[in-house]
Length: 427
Image (cartoon, rainbow, N blue to C red; front, side, top):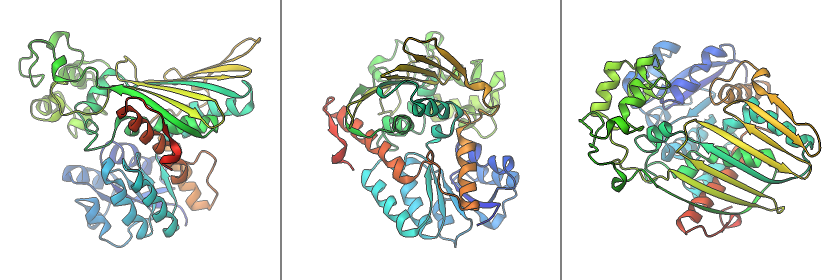
């Protein structure tokens, strides 16, 4: 296989259209888009125009595209969670290598099925656990492996989802309902389960977990709350989850302050104050957060008992002002504290002066998940073109399924009141 690697994209949402497609212009000598598919005609038309995709290779669904003979070297599977395996296995059978959005599947049997299909097809598959490719986590991994803090005994990790991100994606948005998409701990946090395993180089023995939907329920609605934010809501002024604030007037996310990318471009293809306002009046993102059909949790704690006797404690919470991750690694000779939102890592060897590392000085590219998106894709393209072996950070199916088993176990434990679940029962 040689450059440029040809690519077909199934699903033109935030990941397919706005994250992966632009890499064809970032790496024009390495990647060329030759086929696209989405159920929204306007998205297909826009991507066709921007990347000069032949009209006969533009399709109204992934299923329609998969009826054709193989149209590219690689297919990016960027459809909805419960569609992934149904699209991935036929793509493998047609000879595509895959870039597979996480989660692989909300079903453990489907995870095993795609493993078998990839092995039988002899194709390479990477799962988009992009945190492994970020400068921040690569530096953390380097420090842990150097032995500067000795043997890792305990890890404490926090994912600050962000109050508006929780409302956008997990109350009003595509991942609000576990039965339609997947549980929060899988969809959002399989990233974290994967990175914690990779950082420590350890294997999990059992998992226990607790959590629930604390706030986003009808009985928690303030007095006078309307079913839609623009319908004369009496609680509007004091509600931080007010859709008009998040999508129009918020200085950090609102379209009136020039923010026309995510999350506003999820509501309308080309966000303006007028088009976003119309979307809030008629679409799902204008609903009151207390009156949605959400079933996923807004906070969850997970404890991992590792096979060597060490432990990992993880907390996901939607009630935070920032969208960030924090990791504290405690070893026999010191500790490491990493603040991804600030790109700062502090190393504290016992009895010595602390060392502060500013990760922002290590690179100038932090676009897309802290710089992980583009690095993951470029590394995969290089592996295919040059025939090089996958690196130790490559998020292969075999490596990625372990994070899913932990998430499955965590959700099972949560539903059973926190009872421990052995990973061997899922593997």
